[in-house]
Image 1 (spheres, rainbow, N blue to C red):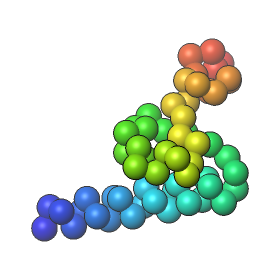
Image 2 (image 1 turned 90 degrees about the vertical axis):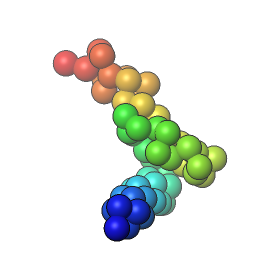
Image 3 (image 1 turned 60 degrees about the horizontal axis):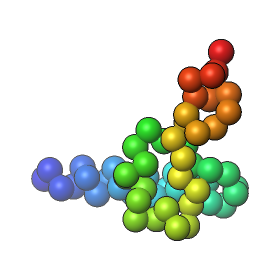
Image 4 (image 1 turned 30 degrees about the vertical axis):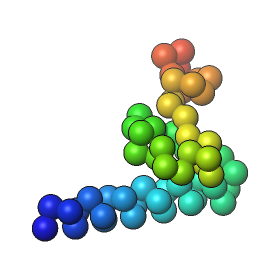
Length: 58
């Protein structure tokens, strides 16, 4: 049963990635490794890489 939760989580991650791809926007996440398998399809970035969202955000 443990694997079933992992599959569900993966499905949600793929929907998020597909949404970012369709809208042509980067996918911002603290867990870029979760999207490594599709990083050639979606621009995956850590929020700290985006001006105004990282450490410089106020």
